[in-house]
Image (cartoon, rainbow, N blue to C red; front, side):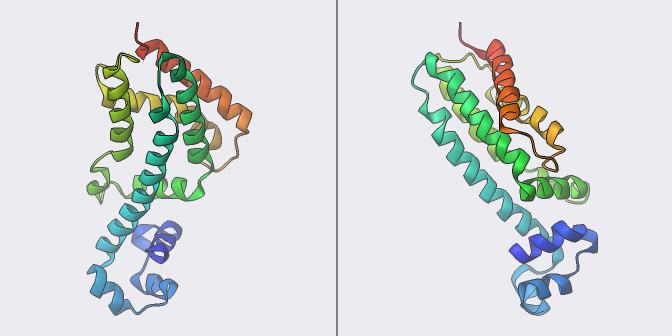
Length: 190
């Protein structure tokens, strides 16, 4: 999988050859066909495995930040901590940025890449819980999760050119704080 991902990221799907992937992995071409049936399934598997790792990291982040909210006084600090960690990861992970660019390039040919939004759904679950506890007013948790994600990562992604240019930690914090303030202006329980 790692070898396939490396070749797909370097060459794109169309130019990546099974021969190159086999050579990178140190296996025979036949082995790849025996396990995956072909380049398409290998590609989808490599992207899915990479996304699963990113989703686990995201879930761990949610547990360390948003799941720790006890009362209304904790919300802003927890959302800022979440946003800073998430935005920093998004802006500094060259693999994440490369996988995102690859998915964007190939989405027309592989619409299955759009199936599911596990990170949005995991965040929506947390926001739904905060709504039920009366700590936020979130009529549509999936939409609110999407907005929060965009507010804390969008400006950082734009300034980092999707991970190509470093953004200073102080700038990330400033941008995230602004995004959280906007989010809370819309969703804070009254």
